[in-house]
Image 1 (cartoon, rainbow, N blue to C red):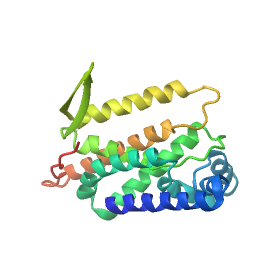
Image 2: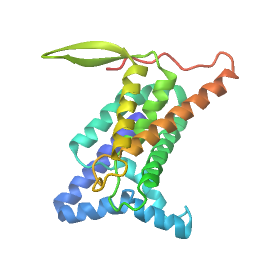
Image 3: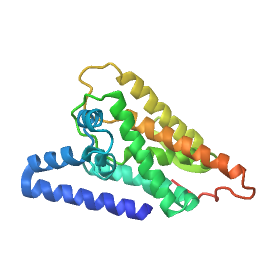
Length: 227
């Protein structure tokens, strides 16, 4: 499933590039607006017609769209590094549900924070944040090879996952809190989607561990090295 998600994101991005080449930026913008999450449109549709509306589909389709090469490759790097262990642990179909569910919670979190925004929200970041939240619960002692800068020098060191991912989440919280109440803050990074996805993955993984404690002998496999 991890490979399939990577391929799906690449195919979707290729489609975006094709639209831009054939129809220009206007065609690409219309596509992003149609299949990305527009908080104002989703909130209006749900308040009028309930959750079973066409706009609800964007909670899934938005997870496969990206705003540029850097956005795409950054997300796929994190997905490739961390998702395989979660998939090995959960199994293919449960992992897919975990991933998409985390992305949905991430999108809804951002909508709840700014329900009047008309800026489309796209990207796999929220779903990948759920993967990171699950990873920090299931593999807190896994070692992540990290590049640490010491003035003009740098060094590669192995750092526990709970430190690396905990630091990442702390930065998201700081940025999210700092962005609250700021005018003209539309666009850019959907910080609260990251926070919502991470918390969703963390809670789901914690519930999984509670369930496993009732089944002696069951537990997560040893993670493969990551860097």
